[in-house]
Length: 297
Image (cartoon, rainbow, N blue to C red; front, side, top):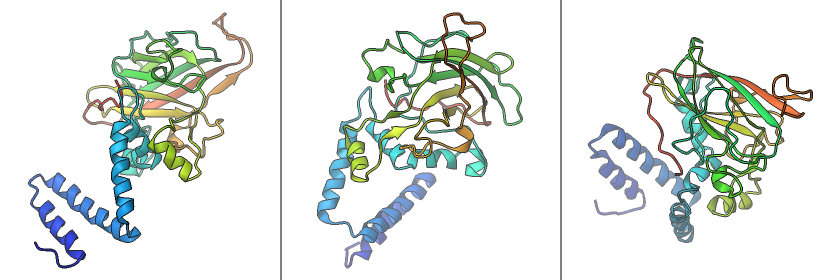
């Protein structure tokens, strides 16, 4: 159609989107046009602001590499990642769920580790952490034979792909649950850390006077045919940023109990005090087992 006034742009664009053959894509594109055009009108976006926004979107892609994903980082920093997660799990956001955002640091092909083994692969100073976990279905029945990817940041707040001082795949491992749905491992106690701030996300946080910190957490990705892949993070409630996660990832269901022990470990003679333990139950929902696209290689 020939445009006669500014309102015609939305009418014209919506008419084009309406011709999309795929029904779900049509629904998404119609809503996208409606809300994008509404946003532009609501803030009365200037030409200069539009050009700057286009440059920022291009920069997000340019800053995403094999070891860093700026797009995932900004999605979390705007609360989008966690919102999508909760809307698609826990009875569409009506009940608690152990699902959480994937984050930008999951890698495929973590080394396999026997139950009870260690995921520490290089000199990583820090208090020892012993994790005992169980994977169950919604009714509490154990899920045996599930593959569990574990990863977390080091006691200096860096994942191994960010830190040349750490060995390849340090603090990463893949486990298989036993017949009781259990797996266990030894690691070191993680700490909270700042997300990367040398890109678009860093500039946004500075402009908003926001801190860049994530509270200490343990990642898990659990795969078992017949169940929806469970992507989870367990948070330490003692972390000073537990109430102000820059990625909006902390929910009540994801609060763990990282217990500090100041006495000697009962079985591990090389463990000094303090050391920590975590017991946690992961609940999987029935569904199709589809692995996500890794944000980094």
